[in-house]
Length: 182
Image (tube, rainbow, N blue to C red; front, side, top):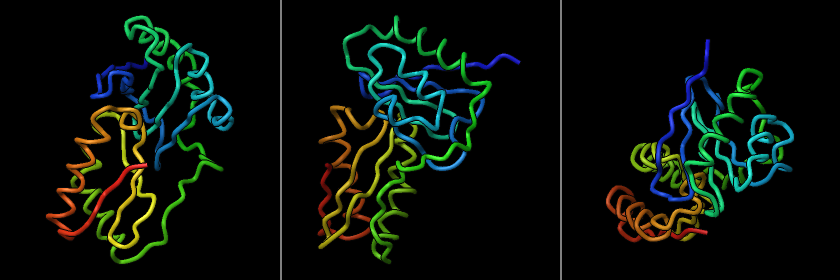
């Protein structure tokens, strides 16, 4: 059976979402910023052989590819699709992200509430656009987040999305919360 790949634009002009008919990451997510980061994922390592690729985000059945902005997507799309198809048959969607494990702040009841709100309201939209948000810290009612995937270098993430996250958390959690991005 031949694998199919759909390509979806993201709000980030330098990122595209490649949706496959098979999983690329069964549990969690993986972010790669260089070929050296992905010794445990041959598919990711192979994708970094495509010129101009600067970041990969694996989640569920899609890979968000971010480029440096120096190549036309029409040229890159075919090269990326070819690279995916060359390695997808041997790809293990249960690969371990090893040293890349996210630094998760210590769980507290307040943090659990915030994470739950993010899971229900924010993350589905960001993941639909090929990205995500990671909580870095939550201290003194200040939530610090880090954008991932297409959101990582998206111009609208720094202001529009950040303000939307803050507005939702002010309404559903605490009107005095402050949200900032790294």
